[in-house]
Length: 238
Image (cartoon, rainbow, N blue to C red; front, side, top):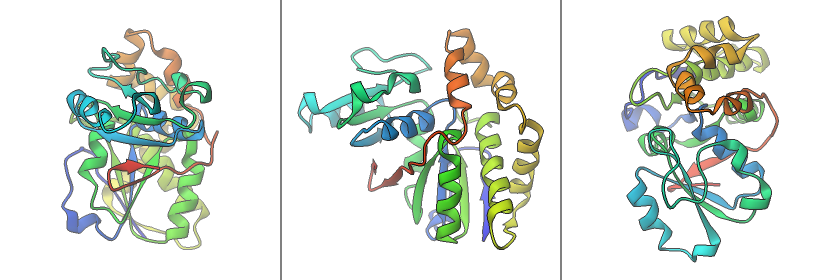
């Protein structure tokens, strides 16, 4: 198995990922929300690129069967049912519902890697299950941090580094790492004992704290609280 990670969220060449397992990461907060929502019984999640697209897609379904969720510029969107805090996505609100979701970084990321062989939704919340799936598939792996408005994301890369670390420790064969993967692994080892430190140092983490969302950082730093593995296929996460 070869493991690569892309530090900036530009669309990779489809030929690079067409036979790879792709792992999408947006710790603060889109993939953490998605994992949380699916673990709480959401029927499916439809990630879209824009607010306008979310409203348009919603017209295809009965209004009482869907929820609109997400954020724009880190803030809740007018007319949406839910924001982008994983603490909002509880069974009482979302069980059996289809969630149409748009965010600044995370939902766009899935459309950038749609040509991947299998596309997994990862966070610290389900990292162990993602590791097991990657080892079972035994394919080359491409880790795709969603970034921070086109820029490098510290917390996403640290999560990618944890994924690499666990695959090294749990796999039967030592994976082949690119220089980028070696760098992400080293970065994870720096924050291994205190993931929240990485969140507090990151640009996006600081922004969330300034807007009063520090509790979300704590929630998103939890490790292995669910074994669910959301998969993105044909525009839908199930």
